[in-house]
Image (cartoon, rainbow over the protein chains, first blue to last red):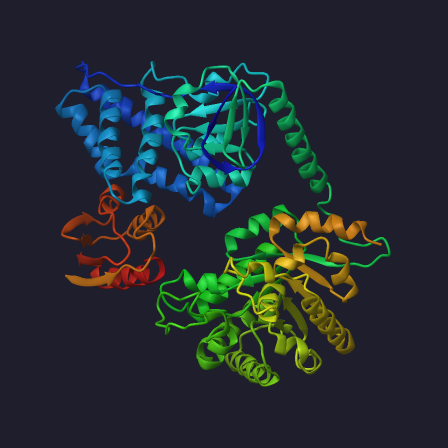
Length: 545
Length: 85
């Protein structure tokens, strides 16, 4: 048994025979064409066909993985249509009397070389895109073009593990799960488009095995572990057994969880709790819906602000929030106002260096200092409220005074919209994050001011234990099981119950299934976790008494 | 002729997705639009030409617009930079 290691790019275990496919060593020799006009026609014809194929791939990709992740195919279509690319091929055909396949192959090599020679890693990666479009053209032009992976898999009955030089995005989209169970490639990176697509579609993948790739033999037995990046060649019985067990339990686990889609998190004694997903960008929405989250429990708008070139306008923000709500189709979304500080900087804002940013000028402290930004965001949020079930959340509250101030801006935002005659939901709930010990200890007073609480367990733990969670030396103290943290959560729960307002638990602790029962006892009406943890948590709740 | 210079703020520079947006944005534009970055120039309507500039974060990117609709295109490109770069 041999083992080699690449980079685990998409988790999951696959066991099967290896099929190596690709165009290693493929070249086209120059031969003079008899009729240049005919060659040009052949090229134009191939280009039309390739474009049509790509349109199909693009539409299919949009349907399966969403528009954002499918942009790469738009890029390919544009490359095919590019005037410089077209003219270079035409010149080669007309002036050098090349045959169409030679012209395409040669020009694609030249264009790819421009990218390959760039210093920027991202741009170097674009050479693969040029290769992908030239492949599409050559398939129609050269009868000797190597069989592509689809053809070489045609007669397979058992799923195999496909080994390729480089995984191109369109390959991932065209994989048939009955024939391919995993992918391994010589080149590539975890952040490539192909790797992202593989993760979304749940295809195990190991990339960048490098020179070890040449060790692979056609049809040998392999075990591939997409989490660790290990590949075992001709594995012994023991290894095989171990990975079979791992694979089966992983698949069983996923399958069992899938059965929970469409069910509710209701305990045996009929207590219902909503399981929400947290997101940092709208692209994460697909994952929320895929994992059947009961809604979005926390959308951190700072990442949106960090990716714009300037403060987004009210209009831009309104469209942004409204489209998120529309995608949720009636399910609730909790959107948190800006939480920036020196550790989460806006590229267009100069902020002073701070010694202790997590306790510094951030979140509500920042917003109350720049009320025009807060009011603009509140107006945009209120406008979006007419498109779904929106709840607004204020981060990092320390005093009742801050809440009163923020509510004054909330009133001003509503007042402005009424004046402008813009419709919004007057009853949009306004809640606060409980993440400072001060807020937890005065929860009873705060509860009178707002519609709901959301406990941010990660920051709360950090402040209660006075342990920086990013500092490995003190990380052992950062523990949300600490009795002090649990006691505060329970106090906040009592205050919420007394005032009759909702209580959400978010942060790392919310996903800890050993604490689920405790949170329910504290009166939690919802829990917010990462999208992939939703179904697991739902199962935990269903098993509680 | 209209001209302006913009300092690129996006972490990835003028990456592939933004390049496709730029081509789309200039699809029906009549004016000639030239990009200049680190002494290299490119036709802003051509994908490979734009990508070959390899525009990075912090670069000073100059736009030159010449033609009948230059006023309109000038405004649109400024907005484009603000949104994508």
